[in-house]
Length: 331
Image 1: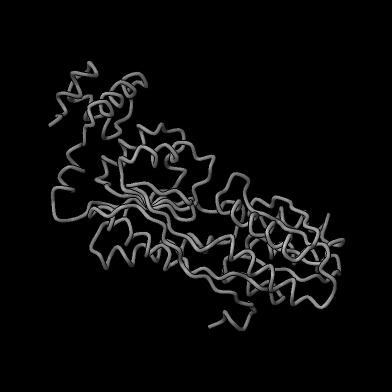
Image 2: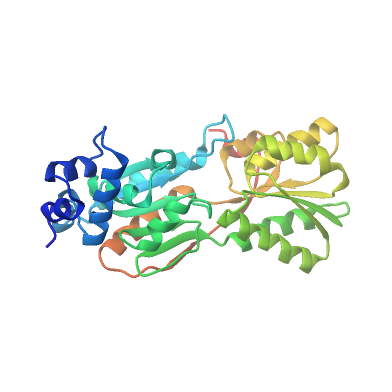
């Protein structure tokens, strides 16, 4: 079994230095950190914190990685729902949950992220909001040194499951309903998509492209980056010449609806997610309701199964089409 002394010898440093690197002490040179992390990786060294955790009957701590929406001053309801569901399920399963925001891992190498997670006794990871641009997290998953559950990211391997609604079908469903319910023409449809290089954005766009072929309408696509402000700007520029506006999130749908109101133009608008804020938009709008609490709870449940020896798989959760208005959300 590899010991901390073996790591120190390979890296050419003192045992105390290895301990300081593992526990993220300050004032250590980048070269020393690099050599110690390389030795840890080459020797497959597992710090005592995680080793003792996994040797017990518990599954080990679960890191819950989140990337809150910073494009709005409104409370990020989706992040809060994820946290509520994850904490509830972790309590039921008697496992410890470690919340980690993406910003806490900025400017770290994959080796440094692994060392940090090992030092915290983490054996499994749930990641919410990973995009194709999150290269360190992509490598973290690919290395399979942890058991991973990815929310809305369709990657599966022996150590990794993913959990999501059927994004493509859900986008088709809500757009189809909004278009078919429209009493006027629906020859030209504006689609305000999400983030570029986002997994769910890509799947939802594919759903819209398929629907455009099936219903034979002209589709104009612009990236709204899940920003209410950006969706408003796009709608002010292109909204009047389109018959229906389909948005890849409720927040963008609110921006689009506000823009149409300011322009004194009415076109049907639909969103995606089913957040409470949608009910305050001033108009009824179709949307896809996802149960974020249940998704997060199932993600925690799935990572515990992986830690117990299960193989990675795809878990598809149900979605629901709803038409939100103020009276639906007040209590």
